[in-house]
Length: 86
Image (cartoon, rainbow, N blue to C red; front, side, top):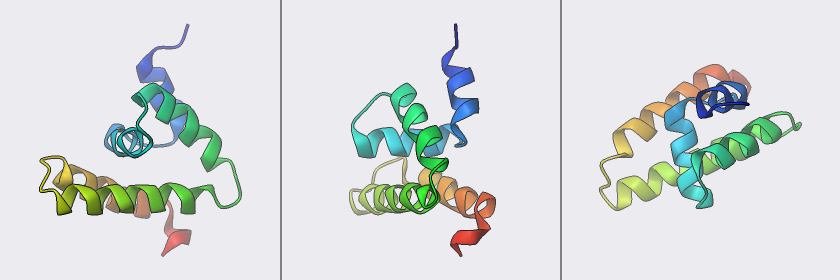
């Protein structure tokens, strides 16, 4: 049986990135991990994930949420691991 830690590792995203995706999709982190793993296998999947992360960063900043700083960092890390998006 896979644990949440295993699913996060297979997803291709960091825990903070998955938290932002889960918030955007209104699903638990484990479902976000499954979505991310599938999405990142698609030709333009990284662009979809980037868009979702960027949108969640904006929402968090606009609402002065405490997660904003960690999600900004998560988006920057995503850009570092996906330089084709720059």
